Image (tube, rainbow, N blue to C red; front, side, top):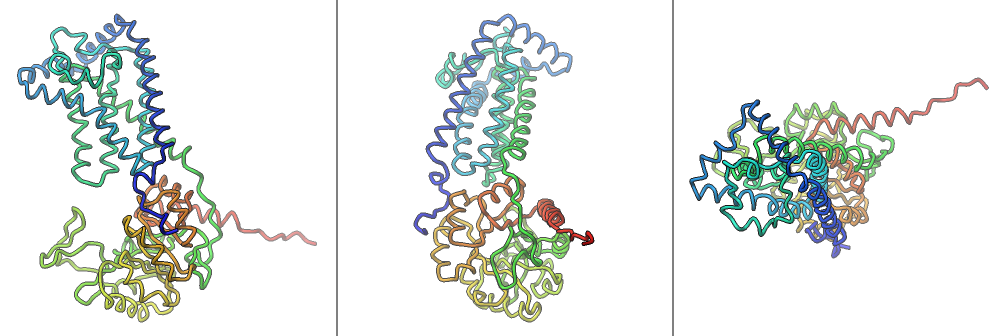
Length: 497
């Protein structure tokens, strides 16, 4: 079992059949495109007349600046070459690389963006067929076709047979780059890649106009079509592609568990980091979540409740790009525990520390919340050993990377099956990984689950614990459970006998 389980390396996420299907869809799209190209090639006069209409509309709007804009750069070979390269290499190569990255690392997001491409492409093809428009380079004799006149690479990347000369309106050259930019901003982690997601569409907007391939209205229309495709894809994913919510069982006690058992009878809901602030603790308690998570850090012999990390002697706390003065008051565990409501179960997520850290937490919980059920969780598994045999304590081994995923099941073999529990980062999960984990571990939790789409997907895979920062999502789950509980109330038969 443990030898088969691996982190979702690209080759474990995507099968050859999936790659073949996606390539087939792309080929089919090209074939449809060629058919539309044949329709418009024979209508050159119509395309030129429509270009005249576009120019008149731009003049009425006061944005007919294509000639003036190009005149500012056409005498500078370096600028012309730069925009030519952006137009040529910033489109299909960027789309292909991003598509493969999403397909191999984030297949759910890949399907969303792919569907946005297909839907917007279908809209664009209809417009190309009924409203062909000649681009400025074929319509205005005063403007320069910089790509053809000053570059040979474009005809290698896109030979004339593959190019629809009269598909200027809308500009999917820009619209699809806008979709790629959105994908990079939303789904990439490195800041430089997310910044590229903002910059690339801006540069492409300039490039399609300065190279005389589009009027100014074309990329504006392309953005509308692309965003319409994205909105339709989001609707499809939420309403059609996602499975219906699983029907949870009846609620038993405050945390969906029978007394003395550690396996939930329905999916657990966890308010991520809500215990780090008293106000969020109160909000989570009002919603009725199963567990409220609080980050516990060992600092100078005290247990502090915070996610932010220290910077050694530098008086600052930090996390990614967030900085906070180190001298601001820090919530202590012994200050938090008296604030916890009588029905609230805490989930303490231990950050790095030593055995003294664990002992201090254990002593505080025994003294301030005696007899209360609570959960401990950590990616630093030795910190959990002090709690393995503690009555009423659920011990959750957290998994944040592929190396830990490969090691966790052998590590858990030493514990009784009913006491095994895992909290695992959502990006490490696939249906196969979840199936293998569930075969060995009764409780598989995942974080961060902040959208309904992710929630429904993980539920359909068998994940039975969701850790979320999204209070609205947690509230929705609580409302669903409340409605189901009310619907399951049996009204006694009072008919006289």
